[in-house]
Image (cartoon, rainbow, N blue to C red; front, side, top):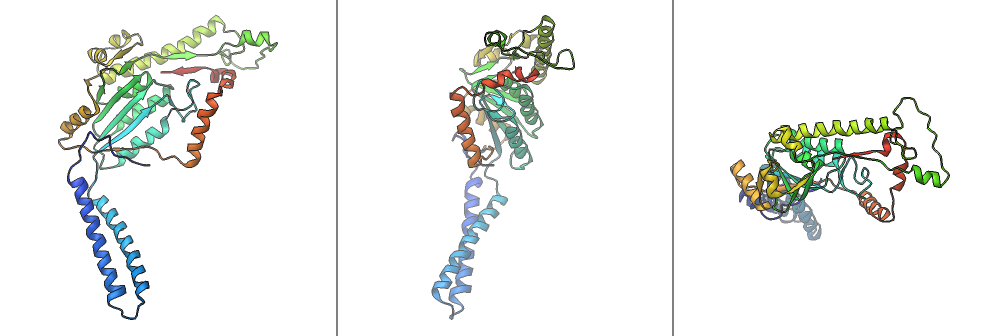
Length: 342
């Protein structure tokens, strides 16, 4: 896990920056003085060069110990931030055919849980810029935010739609910008119909299944009317769950949620409909959080650390996507060829 300071809108408490520095310097100077006396000043028989090397080594060790001690005595932050940016999938770049990379839901959940376990993190800020994505991974992030022990704030930047709004509905307060696109409370199920193409190519489909609807949605065969009803029923069930989740999380009537008709709204209309609580910049969000906590806010961004191999893999995903990678997934069997998204 790595961390970075916030975008500069929040000014941290004086103790959060001065005290750790003072403790670090004092411990470091004490270590240097002790090392000088023991290895250079007192034993006249020691070679000066060896003494200087030992002084330097002990001094560096003392600085490290001082820094660790300072960090344990005074926390430099009191709010955690996690970002959900891009399409949401179980694994990064593994779930949606419409994008080469996105949000790895398990990584986001892990960071929220780490922040919740950190006693310094009194509040959670969830930054959202996502069109949505896979249903269960989106739900996992929302549930993790709901379980956070402290105030939770969702902050929509450019887009907070579908699965992204599912996550926002699990937070105590939802903020957006005037120009943010918010909403899309709906579900889409899709499949590729390649039966005509297969016929032109002389390819026929033979399925060996057990269970009437096991191969419903397979791209290489036409969809029967009863199969269409079955699959639409799945979409409707997902939609009912989504409406119930938003209605409960936002404390609005289910009918009001359904009246949005899965549209997206600019920030001002989203607030009028009860989908958003407040409009403002990141600075306004931080100021409101300071009022809630009763103290100045310093934000630490929690994000997963990626190895060199993972970074190379992400770059390769983007490159292969540019050349049309992922088309083969349209020809997977049974429900693997169907995509249900929020």
